[in-house]
Amino acid sequence: MTQLHLGLNLSTKRTRKREFLDEMRGVVPWSKLIALIEPHYPKGKTGRPPFPVATMLQIHFMQQWFGLSDPAMEEALYDVPLYREFAGLDGGMARLPDETTILRFRHLLETHGIAAQMLALVNEILVDKGLMLKAGSAVDATLIAAPSSTKNGSGTRDPEMQPTQKGRNWYFGMKAHVGVDAESGLVHTVIGTAANVHDINAAQALLHGEETDVYADAGYQGIEKREHARPVRWHVAMRPGKRRKLNLKDPIDAIYDQIERLKAGIRAKVEHPFRVLKRQFGYMKTRYRGLTKNTAQITTLFALGNLWMARKSLRKA
Image (cartoon, rainbow, N blue to C red; front, side, top):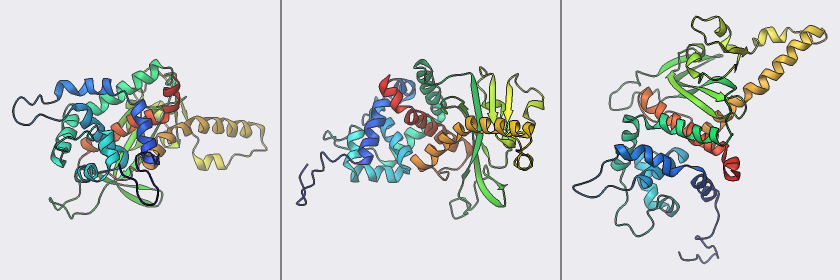
């Protein structure tokens, strides 16, 4: 690569994006993920040979990390040498994947439920390395906005997305419900629902079945009284209004306040994956129509988020 007259060497500059991709290249279990996909990947006996699974998977992950649509990903492969290098397309290949090829690969993953398998495989690795324990879980949900505009091919809003009220504001979209390891904050279960589904209705499905204690915010009050509730100890936060009425000069109330502080410290672990999802990966709004496609994308992002949060420990291991 040539040097600019400004004295910059574009082949050696360590940009933040390059550093990020190098870190993720080192912690993503590529060979095991590829093994999940290969049984379903077309063999290409006629016509042009398909791109390697590794190349398409690397492109798919870059889409998730940088929030790129299929057309934008195709253009980025032409415009950004770093992306071609990461995908192994910088060796003089005669062609690059177009947006249709990228879309078909994503549909392949959706059809065979590969996103959930990816999360399970990543978590198996984290458990084997002692980075995820199973004694306790924390559950929570976050709202994901969906386009409310009807300026699209169908002329309607996404029928699987619903409005809901939070505080004094109304939102339209879906919810990502997650169960996380109470010790590490790594996600073990993901469920996508419409935004109007109450958090408590998805709570039981967020447990992996081996935990003894579960931590949740005040929105899950009453969960332990529900029929078919699993035999675990629920540690649900006190309602804010009730907690504000505590008299901290009273010894009993002071103990209750201290207990709430301890529960909040553990429950805060569930906020870490949401921060990675929305800040590190920039996922603020649904990209597709329908819960299935968007849940698959969110599940993939949480699997990659687990690797990102555990990257330093994985490198040491």
